[in-house]
Each structure stands twice: as C-alpha cells, then as structure tokens.
Amino acid sequence: MEQTQHFDVEDSVWASCLAQQSKSPAAVRGQVATANTRESTGEAEQFKMRKTSPRIVLVGGSTTPGTTAQSVLNHVAQLVREMNGLPEVFDSSEIDLPMFAPESPARTSAALRLIESLRASDGVILVGASCHGTISGMLKNALDYAEDMVRDPSPYFDGRPVGLIATESASREMGGMMMSLRSVVHALRGWPTPLGITITGGTVVFDRDGNCVQPDLAKQMRVLAQQVMGFARNADDIGATLRTRHLQDANI
Image (cartoon, rainbow, N blue to C red; front, side, top):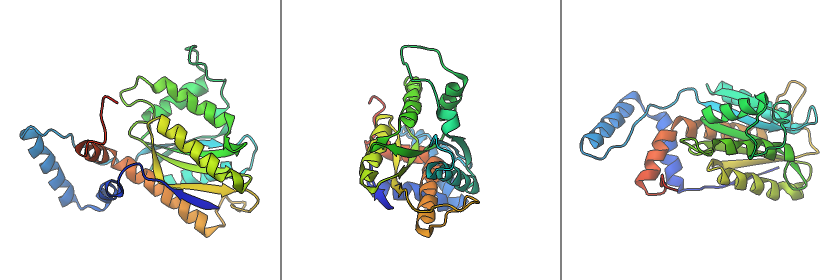
C-alpha cells in the first residue's frame, strides 16, 4: 500500500481556499462585504455561501461480492456521511450498464440515474478495481456515460473534486491504475484530489463489520474524504481564486 500525491495548481491555492472552513462568521461577513465592494466598483466577483452538505457521488466497486473495492466504497461513503455530506453510491449493481453508444440517444433507467446524479453532484469519488493494469471495463464504461454531460453549463466533472482510490491484486499494477484514473478525470475536466490511494490485495483490510483494520489506510481514506468535502464546500471561492490568477478560462 502506498499513496501518491498530485497538485494541478499551486499548493497555495488549495491551502488558501480550503482554509475557508475554519473562518469565523465575522470573517465570512467580511468576505461578503469585499465581494459587494468589488461588484460596485466594476470588479464583479460572484460570492456564494459555502455548501454545508455537499452531494458526493461514489462510483465503483467490483462484480465480485465482498471484494476490497466494494468495502472501500461503502466505508468512504460512511466517512462522507459523518462529515455531513450527502453520499450516493453507485456500486457494481448500479453501473453494470450497456456499452455506451454516443450515437444512440437510448438510455436505460440505471444510466439516467447515474448521469443525473453526476450532474447534480458537488464532488465525485471513484473506487476502481484494476484489470490488466488499468481501469476495469465496467468502471470505464460507466464514466463514458459522462459524455452526455458535454453540453451542460459545467460540462463533465468541471468544477468538481474527484477522489481516486485504486484497489489492485498486484503491486506492479499500482502506478498504471492510478495514472489511468487521473488521465480519465483530467479528460473530464475534474480536479483529482492531492491524495490518491492505492490498495494492494492479499492483506486483510476490513473486518466482518466493515471497519478498516489498517490504521494508516483508515487515516488516508479519511483525509481523502476531507479533501473532497473541503473542495466541494468551497468550490465557488476556489473558482474565483483561479480566475483571479488567470488559470481558468471559460472559453477553454
């Protein structure tokens, strides 16, 4: 088991924006006043209050019952719930979908539920079981359905944090699986969280009650959930920071 870290923008952007969670009401009111001042002086910058209960969609698992991937999916969903988030889980039973065909408008009810949940989400967490060193066909096919969001005001996963957890049967597949997940998320305009987690099979990870028996891994999963929740709560402030730094262009 090892962790990978990745930043898409300067660390200071994450640090300054995620720090919003610790601000007092007075500081928030001051921020509102600052936003109003900018608007009155022609420097319009929309300010929105932080989301207190972000909707987080968790997608993944494995077709094999009782696997580590399935247990991880349920465990992280519980962590999100404990952090006052609204988790919605799409496990193997929900993402066993027909092969995505962009030329056909026909969609099953399960596919429509997935698309609408992703569209309404504030953040996403992907838990992928590897197959031949990369994403399993089941998970990749489910993500292909995000193409239906291409013409949305926020296309694909734009503006959403995406936590990534890879479960693999062999350590030699670790790097390839995580790189594949990150590549897909970048193509979908999502924000991979700084922490990515890889879990190698062959060791006991959860007990019969679903509790993680590896303290280091339990801590990593909690940190990943915190990063997704923190970004989701402050997404509007982060977007404003990036626009200020000219790192985001609406025409891209």
